[in-house]
Structures are given as C-alpha cells and as structure tokens.
Amino acid sequence: MHMYNQSSLFFWKTLRAPLFLFFILYSCLGLAAAQAFPPHTLPSLPNIDAKGYILQDAYSNTVLAEQDADARMAPASLTKMMTVYVIFSELRSGNITPDEDVLISEKAWRTSGSRTFLEVGNRVPVHVLLKGIIVQSGNDASVALAEHIAGDESAFAARMNQQARRLGLAGSHFVNASGLPAKDHYTTARDMAQLGAALIRDFPNLYKLHAIKSYEYNNIPQYNRNKLLWRDDTVDGIKTGYTKAAGYCLVASAWREGMRLVSVVMGTNSVESRTKATQTLLNYGFRFFKTRKLYDSNVPLTTVRVWKGRTDILDIGLAAPLYITLPRQRFDQIKAKMEFDTRITAPIASGEAYGTLKITLGDEILIERPVISLHPIQEGGIWRRMADSIVMYFD
Image (tube, rainbow, N blue to C red; front, side, top):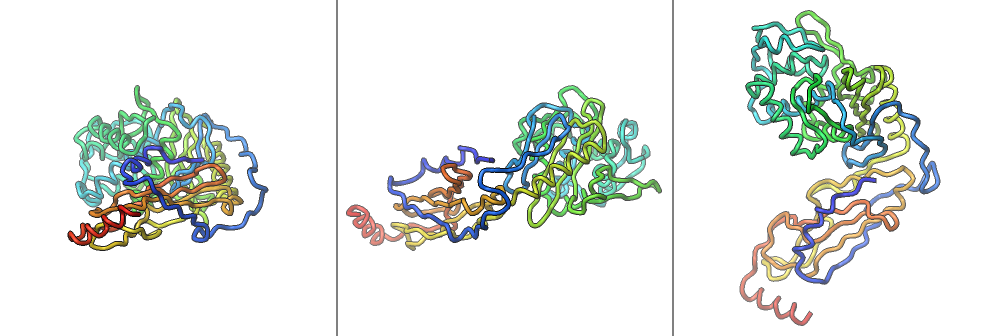
C-alpha cells in the first residue's frame, strides 16, 4: 500500500502550542459496504511473463502489483514518453506552436529504427511530427523535434533529464530522444508508470493524442503499435517499445468507472506477450480495487478558532484533492482523523499548515496530509490582541 513520504510532516515544527483538537470524521467519507471477499484477502495476480512490471492508480499513485519495478532496464521507445512530455511542456509554455514548421535535418532523416518517413529539407508542422512520435513511434520525428526545440539532440536529452529529476524519476537517465540503445540510457518500470501518470495529470488535453489508432503522412498510413487500442475500448494510451536489449515493452492506461490505472510491462518476448500481460494487469486492478476521491482541494474541511486577528474563524482544508485506492471490500473499514492546533494566532497567510489529516485502516496509517489555511487573516487591532492575550493566558 502506498504511503506518503514522511517529509510531508514538516509542518509539525510550526505548530504553536502543545494542545491539539481531534476530530473523527466518519460520516463524510461516504464509504461502501464490504463485498466480494472476506477482509484481508485478495486473489493472487496471474503470472505475468515480463522482466519487470508495475500496476498503479494514476490519481492516488497506489501500487497494486509490482515485480522488479526498480530494476534498471533499457527503455526502447518508452523513452518517447519523456520526449513527448518535454514537447508538451514547450507547447504549454508557448515556446513552440502546433502549426510552426520544423526543418528536417539529415541527422533526423538518417536516424535508424521506426520511421515517420520524413525527407531531408522538408518543413513539417510540429503537430504532424508529434503524431509521428506518439502513433508511429518515429525516431526521425523525435530527433527532428528535439533539434528544433533545443538545437541538438544532446541538449534536448539534458532537458529530458531535468524533467525526470523534477518528477522524481530517480531510476532514469536519457541520452537521446528516440530510445535507440545507448550507454547510460536507462529507466525502471516504476519511473515509467510515474511518467505515464504525469502525462495524464499535467496535459489532459494533449494526452488524448495517445488514443489515436492511425493517421496518414505523405500518403503512407501510420498505425499505432498498441494493440489494446483495438481490443479494449477503455484503453487510451500510452506507448510501446522494442529493441533487442529491452525486449517488448508497453506502458498502458485505461479508464473504467471513474478509475484510471497505469500499467507497465518490460522485457516480454513478443508483441502478443506484452499485450496479454498488460490486459491481465489492467483487468486484475479494475476487478479487485477501487479508487475514490475523499476530499476536494481548497474546500473547507472545518473551521478553527483564531486569536488576535481581525476575524476569529479560519477555514482549513487540503492543498490538493485526496484520492485513495483500496481493495473493494475495505472501504467500510477506513477512518479519517484530523488533528490541528487550538492556539492559532494571526497574522495568517494562505497555505500555511496547521495540522494533519490522517486516513487509517485499523492501526495502519494509509495517508497523512497537511491541512492548510484556505485564506489569509490579518492581525487585529491592539484592543483585540490585548483581550485575546488575557483569555489565552487564563485558558
């Protein structure tokens, strides 16, 4: 079960008094009754024939199944997920536009492997090359856009690594935009799952390009190699890959009944093997697990007393939505408890942490999140401050 990093507890250092107020929030969770299986039991995952794999929820980041997910492996064309992430970032920032032309260099044209069939000296719009990368997995299109954005492929790879560090992909390092085998070019199944979730989360509109099954460029049909796009209408991405060193790889995502999963299989022995392994993982996750959003962001969970301020009521809540993924039969067993300081004094800025929300299952803490101030409160006048000081002294 996924646990939040202990660094999220830094705000305890800022609490201003040893007194805490405890709230047990049961009724607001809207939890379902147990079903399907007795508590603490889940069917075993069928055998997955891959060197490494992982299955996780895209919103809660809860890992549902994994094997050798942190083993360093050749990524092949899964690399292009990071290539695309950088391109999406450039589009969002306005540094490039979908319709601007890209001059195709000889280096891009000569790049080996899967191709979009570009020609030297031609000018091709960004949006066409982007489809070539996502749908056809064109190495030539990847190099062409890398050169257009960063000047050369090495400089673009530096941007890829910068984004990898920002996203916390500690097991990945990139030296090219295509995924062709190279020294010091590697990733892990876990990192690819995190990257897939980031594409979905950070670029929800552009991510839809990954669901395209085919398109035509230069009178040549281009087909997506992700067979699940034809076999499972809940699958809408993400990327296939193959080299001799990497084997057959697939990062996929599917959406069913309000739940989105990301799966990664690496090092399988055929196209059919990676497809079946992915389908098995996705079916297992959707069958036996459920994700729910327990709380929205920036919505008051409760109000607390504030001292020495222009107002004495502070709304507190969460900075980001809170999702949780559990076996379907466990939702009736979770509880929420909020702990916060009872001696909060003005001035207060928005976003300051004043306590914690804990989601528990029995004695296990599943999630801890800081609860924050949702609005500022200015310091009160001298008479308010004096009066509150007297009350606090005798309290």
